[in-house]
Image 1 (cartoon, rainbow, N blue to C red):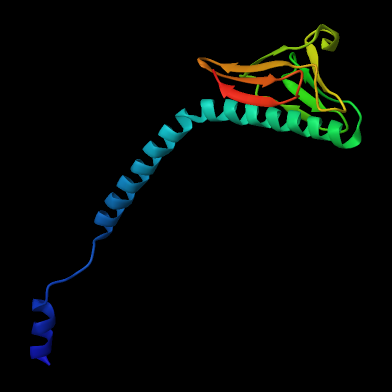
Image 2 (image 1 turned 90 degrees about the vertical axis):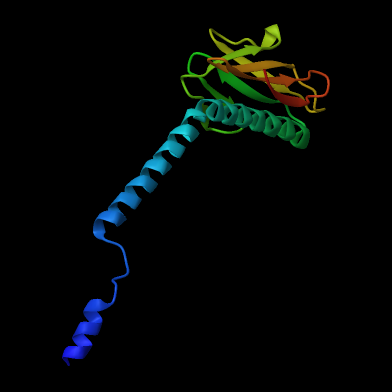
Length: 156
């Protein structure tokens, strides 16, 4: 029996100590936190781009509704409340407060203080205009063609 014990003692141990595992986990967590910080620093441009795409989607929906139902449809933008609504829907869509929004549209579509409409007609045309979203040095503009109702999104 003593021979077997001596053999087991002489065999080198394999594996990691608890301290080594803790150090490796700490390095991994540190690495992921640095990556997370780098990704979140781009969230400003990501958030404004997402807001612009949401508005484009609402505008295209309103145009589609006007074409399908043969009735006018509007997207009403509240500049003071940083929000917008789509005719036929009860939902209020919010734009983050840190994003500045401006609307250029037909004089007849300016309703009240800080509110404007983009109207789409049954034939697909619209009152036209431009919606601009800005935050710092990042901005996106949405152009609405008055003749065709075509909506284009581009970074400025």
